[in-house]
Length: 187
Image (tube, rainbow, N blue to C red; front, side, top):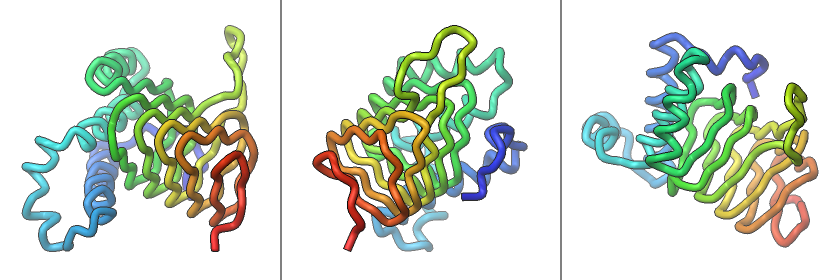
């Protein structure tokens, strides 16, 4: 996946801009946008698209020093009903199809991942003060559909699809599908 260190969540300004550009490209490429139009419409889209606003706020919160994280977290909660923990590690190309009701613990999320609304990714239980509990690791190009919960120290392999209203608490091998309480290989 290429995201081996939790310290990668704090990036340089140029790394931040590269991530935001990758998020923008992924969001519109997923919708079939022609590459030539990506640059042409970048500024108005970034200024007006709520999905991109939410992704940029998530990136800012993840890259901010600890004393400022709560400010960005509160803005995310107020504007989008999105709650993130202190140190999520998120690869380039994050897509939020409907940016509200999302909860992210200190998870590791790969590149080009799509999160729908009302998705929760975190520990399987509430930790005691000072206790660390295992959280999911999400691979590249994973699609997580609405109202899904991914909980515990599990691994979701690359190219997986998690169906709507799913509760995933088991590992998923790459290129598999989770619906109706079962993981199976996609055909």
